[in-house]
Image: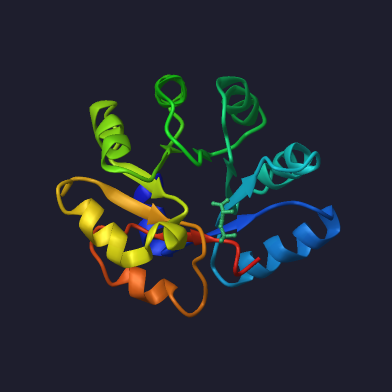
Length: 180
Ligand code: 3PG
């Protein structure tokens, strides 16, 4: 089960591909440290090619991040992505991911967006951009009315602050680029 594996991994490393050679060494470093669930953002022209290459490695669980429309979602599924992540929440994306059986993590920043997620049947969300929104203090307040929701805070998380997030039950894992 994807979300259980992510909970155990605790950290979701996020890679934006600039140089593919550099990304290959980052991925093998992550893999040798037991971090096999990895998000690759769709922010650069090289990202799809990289996604396709790393999806072929059966030891890895590669997902696509920064998904902002349904075409992108369908494209990443067709090249083998095992999960999807978006910075925000958009109903057609949640519905399409569910139809495709793709574990999918929409982003939220407000109580209304968390309510949108819950009402679409989503119980795991990305809290983004976490540190800008007030970090763990903000998330503590925001999560209180929603005990069934687990959060993956992302944005500004680093080696100094990630453990503070992981102390809380409502945090499923933390995401970030600090390891990559
Ligand atoms: C993301 O794609 O979720 C963010 O760019 C990650 O944020 P970070 O670079 O601050 O870790």
